Image (cartoon, rainbow, N blue to C red; front, side):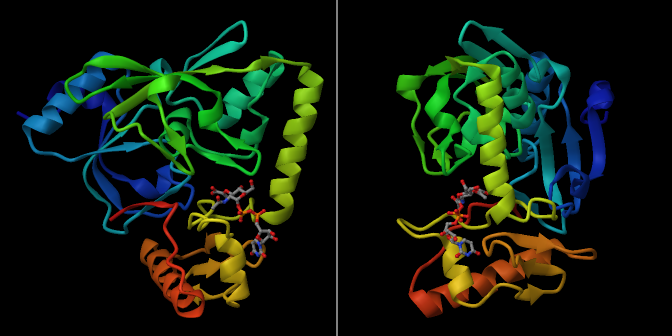
Length: 293
Ligand code: EPU
């Protein structure tokens, strides 16, 4: 019997990962699974474990680089309706892991809830944003997080409250197998004022980042008290290329994939830039980009 015989509706075989990442790069996943509810999520997890299949959880694919060889395992994506619910109660909002950050920002702003403006222009899903504590100059998602709904590999669902959560620079202490959703505490404000602030944050980003190109945002984390982009720029590496991957002229911590680029080109460019920065400044840059090799 086929491993996922009775779950065919939610399984795709050899699914090209390029169509699920902002980089539009990456070979096929052996199984690409979109569970429609918690029971199905548990069932596919169980079967993967019984058959020694590695599980990879994908959010919006906006901070990801997936190997040209693809993923030898099961990629699980919580993009079904069940994981995309938004519920507003007073100044609290609950959102499923699969809700996109941009739609959450839009919906909270429309309902006169402020506090999330710092997330303007940040792509990805609630689940992915929580996992890496996505954010920017004006704040990060951790700061407004009230609680997070989690599920472990055995299907046990539990909630971590703010006092159990730790959010650092582009990291969180969430290690549970699945982030199912979260509750955020916002502040009641004038929708027009919120809209104006979102616009300002977005414009600032647009003025310094190549937002319209194929990239995955910043490749490296900023070293303490330094900007990775500024270091790469200072080393004269803007425009440096490996195959179809090139360091952006607008912001040096963005590596753009041009037509025909391969994941390997981006990987080579990462190595080249990292080595040059060590040579030039003695600083070892740490990846912000998540890589599945
Ligand atoms: N800079 C240069 N050359 C460049 C890029 C930047 O000289 O090519 C200089 C800028 O002029 C500025 C300084 O470096 O003086 C900092 O640059 P910027 O304001 O663009 O911020 P950043 O530290 O490079 C961080 C986040 C971004 C986030 C912005 C704005 C990291 C790694 N990056 O960038 O996040 O959008 O602040 O809030 O923390 C991401 O996480 O993917 C991301 C893009």
